[in-house]
Amino acid sequence: MLRVVHTFGRNAGSVELHDRRVVRFGRAPDNDVVFDPNHDRDASSHHAEARLEAAGWVLYDLDSRNGTYAGGQRIKRHPIASGDELTFGTKGPRVRLELVERHAPGSPHAHAPPPHPAPAAYPAPAGYPAPAGYPAPAAYSAPTGYPAPAAGYPAPAAAYPAPTAAHSGNVAAAPPAGVRRVGERTIAMMISSAVSAATGRAKPRGTVEINAMLHKEVRAATAGQRRTTYVLALLLVVALASLAGLIVYNRSSHDEISQLRAELARLPPEDPRRKEIERRLGTLHPSNANFGRNLHDRVRKGIFMLASGREGFCTAFAVRPSVLVTNAHCISAAKRRGGAIVALENEGRGQVSFAVTSMRPHPLHREIADQLTPDIGIVSIAGRAAAVLELAAREELAAAGAGDDVYLIGFPERLTDAANPVATFLAANIGRITGANGRPAAAADAWLIQHDARSTSGMSGSPIFNGQGKVIGINAGGYLEGNDETISGQKTEVVKASPYKFGMRIDLLDAILR
Image (cartoon, rainbow, N blue to C red; front, side, top):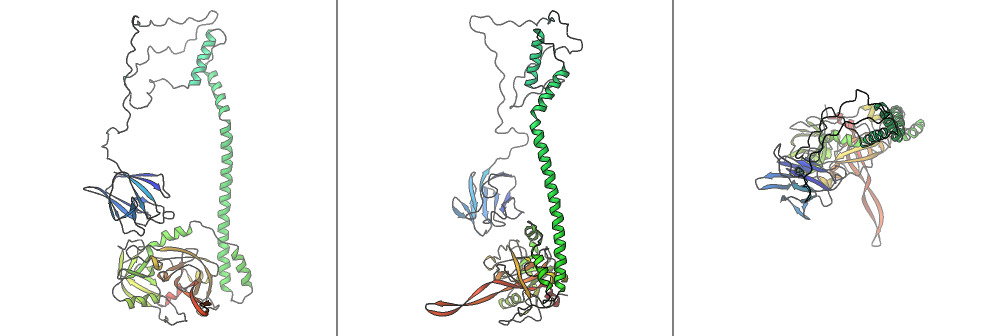
């Protein structure tokens, strides 16, 4: 068996025991040893695995992004010795591996304490005779002036059972049948009561009186605990009431947001009432701290990397089991590359691959400099995607506007690793929605979505999600900005990539998807 002791990372201090021949390490939830997906970012989704071979345990690196280290050296294959410490990534989580022998069921544990030997007979001192057996005590006679104990008290047992010769561990022996356990305080009070009665200082106390005294002492000792319990219960009620109020407020805010967006979509761009509606929208926002994580987990298997010759170049996503959406310029790039084009499933370790059987760009797409045309297309695959993304309805598309939160999932250029495709999740805001010329337009013609996600070329074709987790657009590219700068005494125009990107509204897909 393999014991895994976490010594560095979010799981530091925890210990796992694995009784199987292959133990996998990584951030993905299907591993045996799962690192924290947000904190332990140096580790890959499927980083390494330990295999039990004929010669012993051996660790193999699974072509991880940041490597696996043993003793400060990067390794691809490493025979495991008990106590070896391995680091997943240069600054990633670290574990200590210990080899543990498997014990047969019912066998004694290696660390079980030996049984205590029976006490030896105490020898009599030299010159003294061995003590004879003690005679049985004479019957106790009641003191003068006091009546004999009333009938009904049980006679004492004839003899206590002899102790066993040895016992195992530190487990206390069970009391004889019919005998109740009593505490030291109770025994002390009973002895005190009996002594007082014997010496004539007090009458013997009955069981009812002793129980009443014990009950009084217990109530006095637990009075502080009861007060603490009452306070905690009150705080719990207040917290539950606050949570219920927050849920009602969020629900009412969400309904009001939907109504205001629908009203805003019906108003023409020049209507003065738009400013008041936009101001009100700025004060309302439904909070959901786990929304991004839940969205990623729900759609991650519907995201694909388009690749040619094991080199990724664009992102695509499933809208039907065998139909993916990407940019029209990605389709043009695929045709220029030639050869077989494949779609690699996100987090599929390069092993879940579908051949692209056909590609179709939007009929109005043109690759013309300084002119934006519908940059969207579809590709068909020989297989079925594990997840299909939900597209926003026309009413939801019309209600989208500046300031809305949006989310993108795709493959940035430097992370387009066809051997291990893992998409990146980005959060952004809509800057504005306009027509192709960058000017305000009616809802039907306002299909250009400008946003501020820090995306690169590999993110072309990434889905753009709204706050309800539905696709409202497809990421298409970014702007270039030219500034005059003085270089070596000469005024020169320097062109740089703008932080503002743009996408195409998803209903442009209607022209090619039937």
